Amino acid sequence: MNSKRRHNLNSNIESKKLLIEKQIKESPNIIASYSYQIRNSNGELMKDSGERQCHSFVANFARLLYNCAFFLGLGSPVAITDTGGTSQTAYSNMHRGLRTDASTGTSTYGLQVGTGTGAESINNTSLGTQIAHGSGSGQLQYGAMSYGAPSTTGTTTTFRFTRVFTNASGGSIGVEEIGLVSNSGDFSKRYLWLRDLTGTITVNNGQSLTLNVDFTTTI
Image (cartoon, rainbow, N blue to C red; front, side):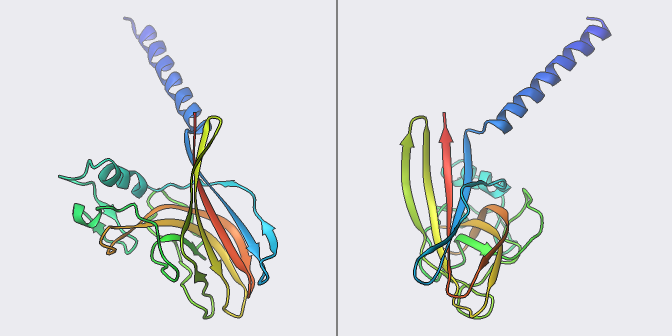
């Protein structure tokens, strides 16, 4: 094969590869999206964001699936960095590491909100600045996680994670980022799945923020 034909063949292969990558990005089979609602102290809806696509599954999500969901890390797990910044290499620190069922007042895992505005990164392992649970200045009260079971309509199946955050701090709080964090089976380690910047979501004193994250698969 002469050099010109070889060059054309390589160019065609590269073009096809780029086309496939473009199609994958434009037509994902599994996506995450979020929405939020602001309600006043009487439960009246003040704002509904509508659905927004999440952009930021982080590397830990794939590593957790590999190690725990598919049990491929039993002998030699891929290292995962927890929300405290420590690299975890023992499977015992990851076992059942997909738990998100945080109870009322537990802010270390489940859906989280924060005030950080740093750029989203595949290497994020925690929120930039998580808002603490409580009723003090700059704090929000974390409700229990709740879930919507998978529901299929036509060729689409969706399930939902939900958490309510209530402002009893005495002042307004601006949420800038959201995240979903899971817990290891022994409750000792936490791992970030995704982090998204939302733009400022203002939650006034006495109001509540209901945050929903949906996972959707489409044929």
